[in-house]
Length: 618
Ligand code: ADP
Ligand code: MG
Image (cartoon, rainbow, N blue to C red; front, side):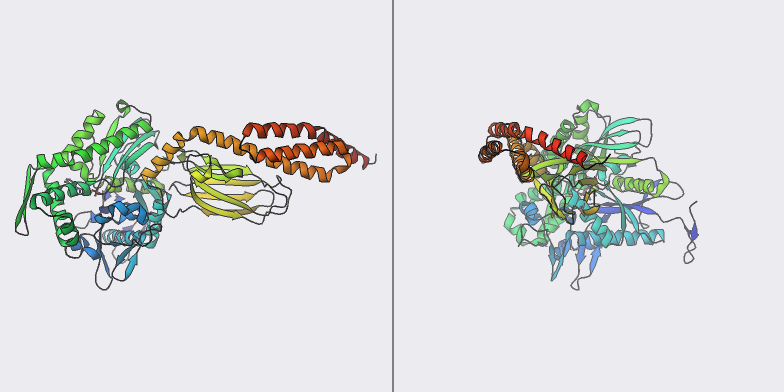
């Protein structure tokens, strides 16, 4: 039975510690809980204020951080020290964000393209993880203030396309903020939960979750069966959201007032000022036909019609993504039974109209689109707290995962689109006698040769006791946990020597890269098969040469001179064939060598058997 305590300081009843749900958004973040009495999800807020905490961090001249609405005010007056959209930088290198660099009005370090980005504020440097942890700390403090109890456990949501590195970074940010992150959950899954989808265990449903936030667009096709959530496909755009709607309005006004790009870049206050007015206009136009405001002595105005004309291409892009997601899930649009709208930008009437036209049905927007993800996270937290044990969440891996084997071949352990969590093990062995260590290189991708895939990690299993080649049994296991983080283990089963790593790639793949890798795997499929066959033949040839040599030195007594010469000749022929890229030739030479050595092997066996018999006394 759960213990209930009384907080002496406040007199309030304390349940066993609550796990909160957190939507750590690009634009806005918030915390939700399951209300202990009503058992309903609830977004936490102080009296008379919004539950949304803008994901903005401002640093004063002493380096002290403020977060949220207070910090957002500085976007105009102190842009260099005011960090917004930090989530877009999570797990990214400067290379990844280069073409959007002008979007950031603060200093993103650009002197190393490959490394993870940092943000410079005055003399201080912050990683996106640091910046996210400031936001999480603020959310934690707010929740504690409202609930009057310590909050140390949370479920945090991430976009479905976040890769391992980005999920890990989110987890680390939680840790830095003093939160024990119980689970990382995909935003669309959380949204579905908030709509109560899947909570009715009898039903089976295929749904689409359309999430247009401030900085990201995400479409997910989920299948819910017996309370199990399965992501059939995801698609989206990491650089498409309400911010881009704002930008079209800014550009429209720039045109109207003859403001050049250079002027805008040099005058950060002007750019931020226009950005904020544009956002105001956009929100206003969700419910009105015309917007106008005084700014620096000018009248900024825009009509709903004009706005809709401006954003039409952006919405069209999201519809393309929807169609791609349907294609990936191998579903016809008519098979989608429910469409759920998520994210503040889905308040724009034209967005709802287009999405409902595409899916041929009215869309669901009853739950507040700003809160829906956090509410779902709270429901998930409640499930984790043990109040709803029957539920399980399943997601998928976007690319295959495997290790490098002989000849640089990719040996896939977990195939693309596998459900997670998952665990797969496979046995390998050594190539050389007395080999004391084995290198395990982990790759991600669809190509047959590892050099065409992406290396995620590498480690050595050392301390394998000396044994003849082929005898050690090294079991390599891949475990992807429910957060989508991969743990690779290698264990020599005879000696129990073991090694493992958690795979945290330097930085992850963008959607485009994943797509490119998939495309390449299709284009090169034929070449890959041919190359794989060649590499396999070469490997086999090398192994047979080695084995034959070993055999000859051990068993010279049972082989006559002619046989020895014939064998040497066949070995030489095979050796030569190995230098040529001709699979058939290699296989012929392997066969020829086998023909010659087969009788020796039989003889050697007989000798061994009779030797064994000789030693026995009856
Ligand atoms: P994120 O998930 O990226 O943090 P949100 O779901 O909080 O984002 O959505 C934020 C976006 O929603 C912002 O671009 C904001 O301007 C936009 N937004 C909020 N309310 C409205 C509205 N009434 N009409 C149009 N856009 C809105
Ligand atoms: Mg969001």
